[in-house]
Length: 206
Image: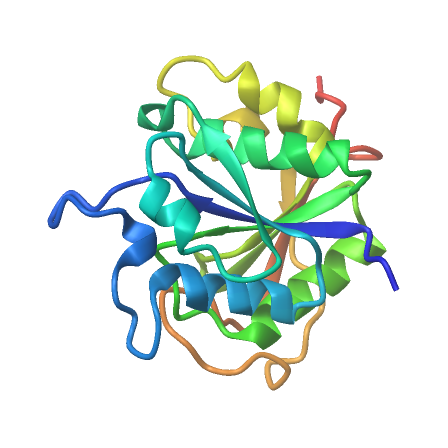
């Protein structure tokens, strides 16, 4: 059964320490790319779109089966541009939202991703972000119609800056603390923040 959500993996960056693509770093039992793609796919979303640098053929060649590449011609612009491209590609496929995960967080549990996907299905116009002890984690469920706003991000703005400029506020849905397994990087948490506007995540607030 088709899902209303896609997966978007942000994998256009390189490791400043090794100079290699982050996607190909060893995560123990697989590469970062393999682990993150498996986690996102395990949440039941599809297709899984992987945003990669346009000049990284080794990453394109290493894409797991059923993952689709989305080239980023300007990876130096950072995750804002990659997220915009991934959301745009998902929107063109008719997806209302996407589960967006950076490739350098391979520790995220499938259960965390699945709960975020479930929250997005209930409220597709919100940005759902996991939190743990007040710290934000990954992945995030993001409405695909936000792509144009991310393409228009001002110099120096991150995704949170763009969402804030749009007037998106934060609320905390009720989740059982036992429903999310323990983890690290703030990604597996006993609560999830949903950033949303009053009525629509696409309507700036006064």
